[in-house]
Length: 144
Image (cartoon, rainbow, N blue to C red; front, side, top):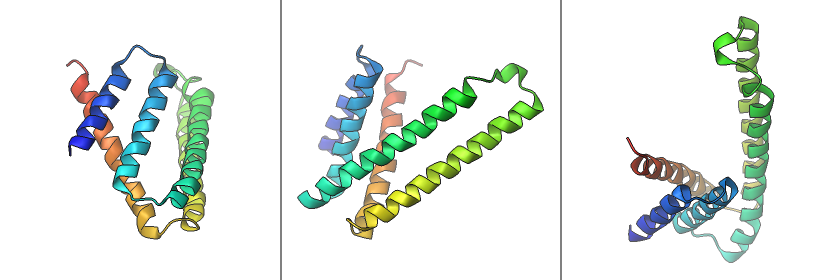
């Protein structure tokens, strides 16, 4: 448990430091990798094959979300949305979620070629645990 506390103390410092957003994101990514590695015992070969795919998937997911934000969220004023614009925004979000699902399914198939199913499940659980810990850390470090 001390190991996880140490990771999240580092995370807290990374999140609250005065560094640039990219540096914060890189630090969080490093902590995510360390967290997942601590939860899932990947062999050296699995590590070499898995992490490039994992990073590739996350880059594609980030690009999808960024494109959505640029094309839809920033182009609409929530106060003055027409019904047509609101519907367009909702449909665009459905499309985004479907594309995310499709990408996750595609990479699940790729992961199955290099990892046992149990390790894939452990990675997914570790990702969820990391997100929960990240949220807890952010909440505990923000002034109320």
